[in-house]
Length: 139
Image (tube, rainbow, N blue to C red; front, side):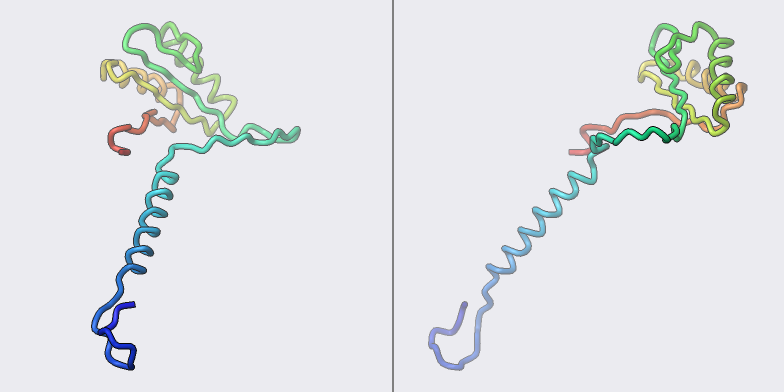
């Protein structure tokens, strides 16, 4: 503790900032650690199995590579009719079908919009685009 030099009841002329710095550094470390946990895209969880559970949601994953045929749930859709038929069949199983379009960054924009149109014609109302978090932005 800082004082004016004598041990009497005099006025303290200085403030000891060491405890304040210690507390601030601890809070900063806690903030950095929790920020890394919050930014993490997912936590791996091993969910238990139940015999009476139902699948909560059917996801219709459409992959558009730069070249080659469109893939639906890792099955080749050779043309638009096949893609529309697969979407209609999946929509018949689940009225709340969600389609996710995962397009390669080098795929032509026109091709992505065309696949989106085919899905809309098949009756799919909920469509999302898949993306990965930017590694440089998270640093």
